Image (cartoon, rainbow, N blue to C red):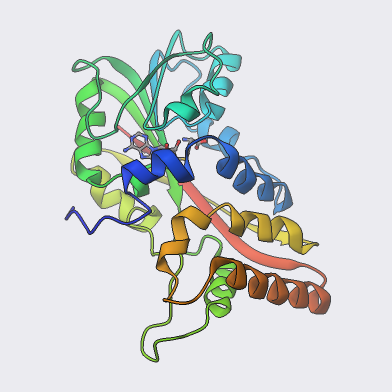
Length: 272
Ligand SMILES: C[S@@+](CC[C@H](N)C(=O)[O-])C[C@H]1O[C@@H](n2cnc3c(N)ncnc32)[C@H](O)[C@@H]1O
C-alpha cells in the first residue's frame, strides 16, 4: 500500500506521546460499549475464533494488555509476548503476564518462525506501511501459525460520525470537514491486504448498535479522539466549540427519540 502523507492517525511520534501516551483515551472509548445491543463483549468474541491452545503468542500493539490478560487468565498460551509503540501503554500491562518491549509492527524484534499465534487488534489503521507490518507478521509466525486481526467495518459509529461532521462549521463551500478520516484498513479493505501474505483469510463480523440514553458517554467518546482529529478542523474552528455543538445535537436527538443510536460494526480476520 502506498505510504500516505503523515497525519495524526499514523504519525508515530504523536501517537506515542498524545493519543496513546497511556490508556486514558482507549479506556474512555471502550466505556461506551456498555451500551451495545446485543450485549456481546468484543474481546471475548474475537478470541473465540482461535483455538484454546494458542502456543507461543505475540500481541502487536497490545496497549495496556486487555487481550494479553484474557489469554493469560484463560491459560490458553504457554508463553506470551506483547509489543507496543508506546512505553506508557506497556507500563500498564502486568509484567507477570507477558514479556514486553517497545517495538513497531513494521519491524518486529523477533526471529523468523518464532510464534504459533500473532494478534493485532485495532492497530493496523495506525501503521504507516500496513503491507510491511503484514509481511512482518508472516515472517515471525511459524508456517502453520495463525494471525488474528481486528478492525472496524465502514459503517462503524456512522451516526456519531455524521453528527461530528454536522458539528463542524463548513468554512469551505466544496469540501465539508472530515474530522475522522476514512479508515485505511477496515473490514472491507483488510481481506486483500492480508491475502498478499496469507493463503487463507477468513472474515467474521460483529454488527451491533449503541443505544445511549444520556449525552455524556457520547461526548466523552468524542473527547477521547481529540488528539487524532483536532488538526483536521478548518482554520479558526476550535475543538471546544465543535464539541459543544456536538453535545447539543446529541442532547436534542435523545430528547426526541429517547436515546442516541448509532451502528457499531467490528470484526476479525483469521489468517493462516
Ligand atoms: C486502538 S489501540 C488498541 C490496543 C489493543 N490492541 C486493544 O485492542 O485493546 C492501538 C494501539 O496500537 C499501538 N500502535 C500504534 N501504531 C503501532 C505500531 N506501528 N506498532 C506497534 N504498536 C502500535 C498504540 O500505541 C496503541 O496502544
